[in-house]
Image (cartoon, rainbow, N blue to C red):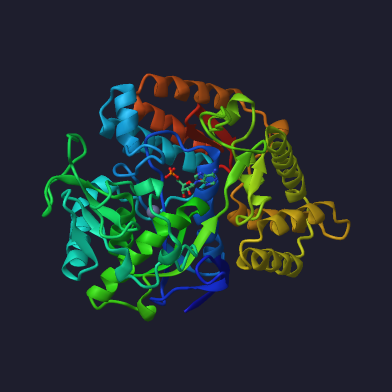
Length: 477
Ligand code: AMP
Ligand code: ZN
């Protein structure tokens, strides 16, 4: 069934309608973080893409089922043939799983701060080893994969004739020696084959037994295994950053389609994924973000500059997902000012009467249609700026439009603006007591205080930077 949401599909190189092939929910898989470090704002731009899709589908009347993997094993760094998790573990002399759990928790906190709604499931690669074994075993049985003389299992690229359909990197044109999957000459049958299961060799951490001996999974196989298992063998929409188009998604497509063909489950002419959506990269002040360039920006850097983290979200919304975007501190400051101004205005507009219901409805429908047409969020923001200044619309109508479309924007536009806020002595007192209870880890007491504050119209929010609060409508007594 068609959903009314149209997105650019990298494989067919055109805008295509998202379908809910089971007629009920849109099955979405988003490639998740490799949890050996904090997600930078570029990663977050890509993670926001899944949220915008799910929010748009919701406004179009569709539920989505979103799965996002946590890569905590097997992702090789680009230049070294070393696992990113293990590299960090060796550098910091820590247990790799302890590092993974720490950064996984921080990833979830970042999503929450950026108002990214949680996925339905966050399966970990390290918990999905059996799923990968089942998939690899089937591929070996069908002749799509083979055991190399080094004890690793490789996918035989030439058994998948349409290899290269997503990225355009056809096998005939691929040169030997791709950096992601270097192995000694002569072990792989064909230079573009890649490892599904790697023999442990000297490695003693993060290794598992398997039918092919002790080892660890390749990176690409985890996404095939988890997407097919958790989304019931078909993915309506697959999301990731543009760098994953090749080799990650190309290899995933070969693995998943070959598995479905082998198990007789191939729907939709044998394609496991209906639509491949890629978000373009984020640059910071004109340059690629990297440790060596010293320009890696984290979400947690914003509050230190007295900036609302949601200012970053507005910056992202002002740039179409499929164009490269150059972020700067100036643009975040400008977005922060816009959000504050909107909150002030909406607060004032709301107290006015004469809501024009039909006018508000048609304007909201128009804004949603911009999102439905390949997530044209810059057009929505531009239109909101026009509406903000309009002399024709009643203030109450403007407030209704802004607040309704905030279901998509996720900018908390209903927050009471700072300039109009004044806490009563009782509220201020309770807020302080709650902060103390939290610091003392007296969670029962801090929860009770939170409930008390909620009844008084103050919502307390725990963030990475500590306790924050906002005015909300008091709960009915
Ligand atoms: P990683 O944690 O490195 O596996 O990356 C997580 C996600 O972030 C992937 O979907 C990447 O494609 C994406 N990504 C990495 N760098 C950037 C960037 N500079 N801008 C946007 N997305 C990025
Ligand atoms: Zn992936």
